[in-house]
Image 1 (cartoon, helix red, strand yellow):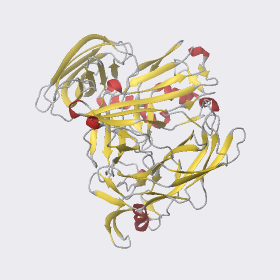
Image 2: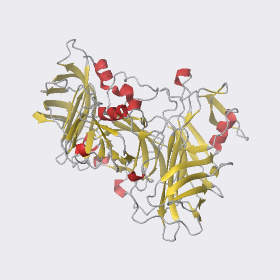
Image 3: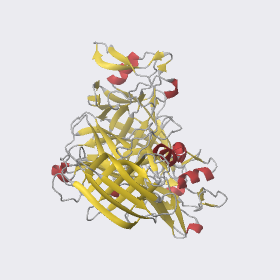
Image 4: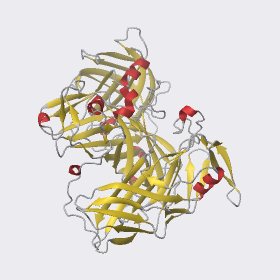
Length: 630
């Protein structure tokens, strides 16, 4: 089996949009998924409140994807790979002003609410910037109410759950004004969250004065296509006359990704990261390597299914990279976009996807999902970013932390998820996971840069079908009872080493038992500073199935050496190595080209081995027994 065919086989990723994440078709989440609050929320006595927004925690922004996608097959979504100016054009502007909420008298503990911004929210002038040769002044930033409707939703006072949320505002600044002028047929839209495709989440919390703090985050996707009523789509350039008459260029397929965070809850004092502050340069792009020992995706299955006998946790450690793009700095703050990438050097044609613009992200390992009475084989694990809802956070360079929870939407692939979708006969629709959680960037050993993220989501599963361990046998399945919840989690730690490598890392082990129950041996000698240096790697898996065989590396393609957070090694020396190479696989009768991706951690408190041949033909790892903190 040659390399290309093996990678295509790895992808049932050709079904990556079908994989996904168990959204409920035409329903709202069951109340059982939202447990009662310790104390129910109490509405203001007047059913009306006006509060100032917290400037540190509130901002408007965008991640404009500037493309050259003229083909009709790439539009209207503009998802070809021809991104201009080296990345998205980023800006965030922190907001000040009052926010008004009017509640209706509750009925069965449900209160309808309307939100407005009576004197607008305004933000300071900032610069929207892409990494290469593009910037534009995002000045006169403001959030205004739409002319016809207020933002609204329904609040459950017992659980805090909000349903039917529709947050709609006019987001204005000089860039949006200039965009309209160079595209005279473009009708300026009201930004609606979640809109046709996006995210919207709001949380109310009780205050001591009887009012309710609120925290909202929304993002949406606004593709412009390759023309606007027959006129080419144009991007304003920062060469403008006194009446905002700007030069412009054609940008077919350009899309806007506006996002808005508003909170009335004061940001708690956070100490400076001090000597743990990393050396981050605004308007740069850095490539970090996943420390697979501390990076995993999984799900905490709390399923009311007697046949399973109780709860189960499925988890796979992940290989890959994280690209961080930093925007322009304003005060302590820098906007950051985040993207998942496959392991460095995995240079094969990507598997075909049903929607252009999706591409392979992190790759995982075959694992066991164990319940008290049943065990599942979970295979072909991989993720890809949601290309229509770009993860963007606001990084505080003084504290090393991102503002609030950062949302990172991803599609997941593995065979149990695919079986769940198939066996629920269209009751579940494909959608990416809405993962959100804290993120930070800190200085690691020897001035390395360490990115850490810990996201999760809660999904009700009452009344839906869960497959039996023979996932391909739809005739035998289980129906989840009341209180069933899925809790996907997404824990990532990635590292950029900034010292000069001097070490050649070596090691070998025989008869290692993988977490999937296969026995393997390996040996490696790989220099961290690879050019001109010899390298070797061999791997043997004794399994009798498709995973069994032997790999011998002929050419080293890419190498990255990093340190765990507890490393005490001096500059140029490392406890963890990641490398990719080409070589031969013993089961290939045609002696074709094959690829291996490897990570070995020699850290005393975090030993780990990950080996993947052809992205999944043979894949082993020594998954840690407990879920590591990223």
